[in-house]
Image 1 (cartoon, helix red, strand yellow):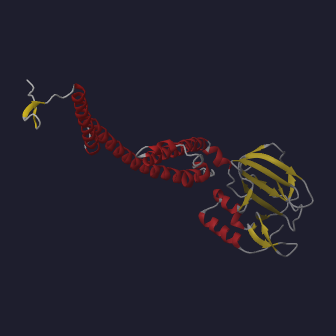
Image 2 (image 1 turned 180 degrees about the horizontal axis):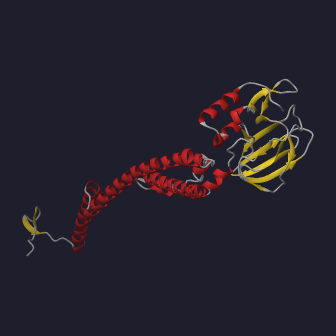
Length: 323
């Protein structure tokens, strides 16, 4: 039972019962409830700010574990990148060198990166920088693996064609040259026989009597047959495939036709003194992908090691060419 409250009335000199109106009592109750609600809300806010709920604690544990997994993934990607670098290095400097293939340029291996930031949405997350970095690395490694896979497919085809390639690459001297007495002038700057000035000599000169056989140095197809009183004179160009071509100049007689298939050792014609030539000889050139290179690097197939070293010494002599 609710206790009654009294107050002392100075006018009547007696205690009188306090009668509180219902509206005032209701206001007090509402005020108490409001104050309690506000305090409860403040306590809830403070506790939620400083103290995690069980669900929040579980989420934070999961986020921490996910961050750790991302960091471990980042380390594994770095290891994969190192392994891939090694594969690319061996591909360019070993496999492709062996099979006479051009290395894959760095621009091709790294194509498709940069430009619009595909990972900008990830950066809105707490660990967005780490996530976008890993996503970028995954894309980069995926592209490089694809290019490397295509490269290995190409190398596999080169392996299948290795026997054909070895038979096609120029590998013998174009004239019979016992004791190396017919090798007269090598590749490099030489004294021009007519102008008597230093001029680049892009082939090798073999002196021989007119009518001496000229041999094809590798399997291929006759790409050009030409007769002229100037320059190379009567000459033949053989396409060996794989980027290789050989030129045989100043011939007295041509014994092949354009489009004819020829094998290493076949006679293409005879040594002569046609065109810009000062004596009977064969001017011989080797070309790779349209660029003229030193023929002496392709005489290994019919020379002993000591003979090859001697020929290198002869080729290095700064003498006069014959054309």
